[in-house]
Length: 254
Image (cartoon, rainbow, N blue to C red; front, side, top):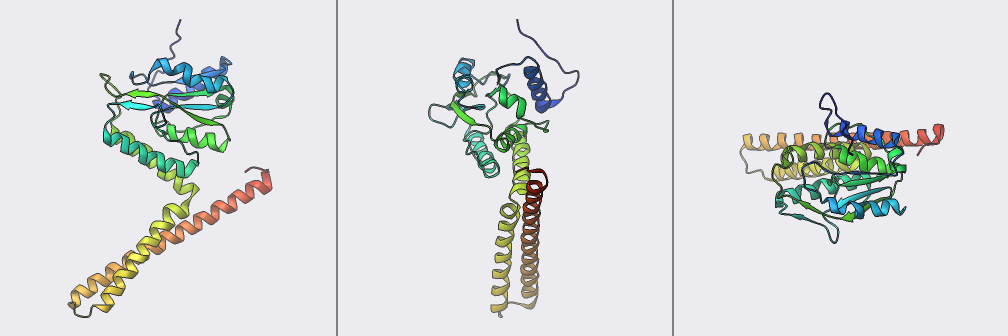
């Protein structure tokens, strides 16, 4: 018989997963399998997803569309592109090298159930879970699966809203972990652009005075914005390094 757990109010994707993790832990489960309720995941692949968990080869298994043997039936091109972009941003932060960070078809070992912690309530939880797994040094493995997009009445989330929410979280997380990359690199690009514009304005003396003033102001504004971003990135990078050293020194945490 199936046990159905209900929330009196809609607590979102994150709230549902927190309840599932708690229930699985209370039941002393050896493994937990997650799959979306819209019928896109192949239930016949559950044993294949569980195998590396039960064999002790992984703590966290992901049903992946983008590894050999996986795929997406009638997956729209824009969705495929969006997943690739989100996955690239996530991998810069988590450094796991996962090919399908947006698959909701996942399995967890008892170790993962006990150690994973997450705060997000929305779909961005898919990325937070991966980052926490990396920080806890859990073994993450992708298993090939096929996800269907031809099912009637699929997910209520639109690709745009889902992508915007998850991508925003990925960039915020990346800016916290690698601020010099997220802020310093664009800042350097803006500074270089401003310098090039200023040099061209100074050299082209045939321009009308109002055009020279307009171009000069634009060059200064872009250059200052670039400097500000670079300075912010450097400060945050230094602060992050100092905090890590403090945690290691005072609490033995890394």
